Amino acid sequence: MTKDDHVDHVADGVGSSQAVSDHSLTTASRSPEAIDRIHFTRSYAKINLTLDVLQKRPDGYHELATIMQTIDLYDTLCFSLLDEDRVSMVCNRPELSNEQNLVVRAAQAIRQKLGLTQGLTIELNKRIPVAAGLGGGSSNAAATLLALQQWWQLPLSMHDLWEMASALGSDVPFFLSGGLALCEGRGERITPLAPHWPAAMRWLLLLKPAIGVSTATVFRKLTATDHSNGSWSQAAQTALQTKSELLPTDLYNGLERGVLEQYSEVAQARAAMLQAGAHFVRLSGSGPTLFTTFATLPEAAKTQYQLQKQGYEVYLTRAITTDNTEIAYF
Image (cartoon, rainbow, N blue to C red; front, top):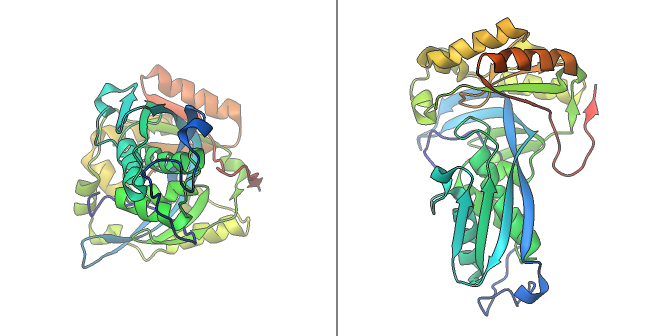
């Protein structure tokens, strides 16, 4: 994790972990014979509705305030037991099949913390765009931590998982709980929000330009005018929680100006979205993914079709919770 790569969220928990004394899954957890050999889970993406960049801290990080929301765009992970003391991983995108993948590092973090020798094979079917400002890799890591805890019934508290998630990356802790949240500071101060969502924003259309964006570079190029005091995120939080009108102009991202100026492909994609029918367009995180919202499916699908005809990578999705709580639309 780089010091400038941080649009994050933290989940708290209580309790403490216990040691697994025999280095297997037989103490304070299920034995290998007692668990299914295969386990599937989903790993959801996120968008940043707002992103306020505050002052730079002495440690090199920026203070942030951001409202993040889990969306119904996901990768699928398949875990299977391996009769060897190692973790192997394969992805449908071969360049991601390596030991530095956050999925492998998350699994190894649990094995090392509890002294486990149980081997594991992880298959990752990637659908979330890579390096897109949607948190795909971080979501994969959090999903791995949660899956192993639940599948193997490990003696790990939410705080234990949060510590491991924080060490893996600044976006990872958010995905331990997901949903809708206001995240402040460097990501450690979290205010979970009730799942309220404007009906006029019930369909989300995402466009991933065919380029990569360096988060560290984006932060280094910030100017004084890009900084704010967190008021955009606070105002959006108030609107959502009181079920008041949330206008497109309320969805501010302090990184957007710099990204649009530095990456002409993103600016061109934004213009294409507006021409295709989007009423507004915002950047998610540090990008390059852009998003807009629609109140009806026909309108969203029409814009999606127009953009796909131009060769753009487009996703039609929606806001979701990850605990089966119903979203209250207003």
